Image (tube, rainbow, N blue to C red; front, side):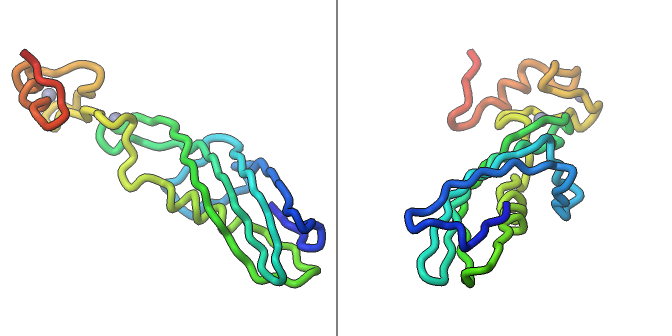
Length: 152
Ligand SMILES: [Zn+2]
Ligand SMILES: [Zn+2]
């Protein structure tokens, strides 16, 4: 998104941009953009300071850290960028948007918070069904945690 400093009225300016994933290099092998993503921004200028309040919504392809299944998660970020500008400047916020998406990317992507993962012995995806290493009794023990459901 490019912002022309000389076009910002005193009351501020609402801007919107759709980013094409094929033109956005995230610079990280593990971050895969799923589809075009949206940025809404409210831009204000006071003297030489340009302030951009950006609302970023970005669907990303991820592989679950536990069960290795691919899934799509829309990461969101509310960010405030500020720039010192001159009246003739054109400010491109794309680099800052990219940084916000990288910051919002989860350290440990999970397809769902309670993903059961894979059996360490046979590789069975335990979200799909238990394997012979994970009997009903074992699973009850796994559920025995604060906030977990207690099987009878
Ligand atoms: Zn998973
Ligand atoms: Zn197993």
